[in-house]
Length: 342
Image (spheres, rainbow, N blue to C red):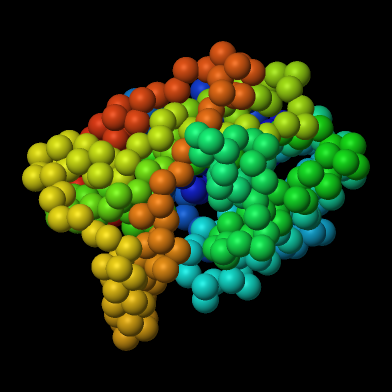
């Protein structure tokens, strides 16, 4: 049997669909307070018999910080996919992210070693990698993070969590790590990268000069399954389809929504003003800011990532970013017509 964390999130829900379609027996961990409606909705995007497929998941309630409770769920588990993570670029979430992302991963690693799990797959992030300083400025799996540099709270939490996986590998755990770039796909439209499409549907006037790597969530799910079934172990892989400018990204989103392309360039100075205004508004309204210091800074940086290692390892062909955007916009429009808020 397969054990999956984060099954109510973007990557985890798509992974569950991929596993169930392949006929795997799956046990998915969820918090008592979390809803599985998003996961069911994700299944409906890809198969008319989504109810039948969704009902094959064995959902279990638990908390990754509860070691003893978590341990009881592992008795008949062969493989583990760890997709769960607290994602935020708000410094006020520092303690929660470090606790959930690092301690939760530590518990899973220790239990997996104790239970002699066959293989462990961890969904990390490109946030754990350094920024390349080579001639072409292309980051690959050997580009280590500069721990003395400016690091977001999220990056730090994922970096420390990934260290727990490497520690597990050193202690004999058979594991693989994937480092996805910015993930594109339908999910909770109010959170993470999915929020780009909610914002895009309201009409975009502004663009930045930044460049980043992007990958389709379906690719992430499929590669995880392929790596789990392969003989590959104790390696990490960047998962990124293309390096795309934010202007091109938002142009494509606007075109798919039949809106005018963004036409006002935002420089770092204006971005700095924007995140400070958002911070003030969030304090007054008691809501999470749409723009943070970290996201404003990143939007004006140019980062390039190599997918050469994973392409060569499993001969994989990524979905083009333009197709990912089209697919996600289509899902958003469908939900918007049906007034579904997920």
